[in-house]
Length: 283
Image (cartoon, rainbow, N blue to C red; front, side, top):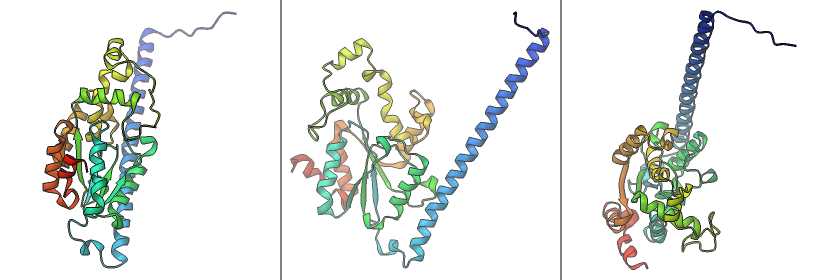
């Protein structure tokens, strides 16, 4: 039994195709508008929740902020980029916290994802702004930059970070996945047992040494937008540079880590008094 075909004149076929394309564009536009509205609503709810926290602390009694001087109310966020000597630097913060009387807290994210969901962003902002018992505080973790101002927070934390030559960082991370480091030598790494060198990986076009991996430092400064992880994005690069210049107190480089530590000690002695000597002596 043959198939029945309904033949349409060419002009009607063209009109049908055009109508379908217009309908799809209209639907995509409406979906985009709904997504934007949803995002605005979620951010409005987040701001409202943060304000409620602040108001509750105000109504509970005299504001604790008033009894804390500027240094005692200080929060530093070190959203550390992997394999930039971040563990070495963080250990200095741990070694000094008892002596200089501040708290060190590790930022744990779901599945170690540097991008937090909006719900987790709200919780994070709440904890940072309302946890008075943990001030002054030094927070550290592999997490992308988060703009507290978007959640209605007036007094933003101090951001610091360290960056590294992209190729040197990638080579270091490549071997870290295979051999680990001195801090947790017993931990089995994802590529443990793979003896292939970095040069061999490049020659074979392996994924662990792909040029796209050089992009990883950009999203840590760009923020939580999905576009930040779009390798080669001009917008992401510009946003990362803007945040680095305008939102970070200080950004060092791995190759000159001692200079970075010296500047922090001079500028933020409440946290880093004694850091330079500790770094030099390792004591």
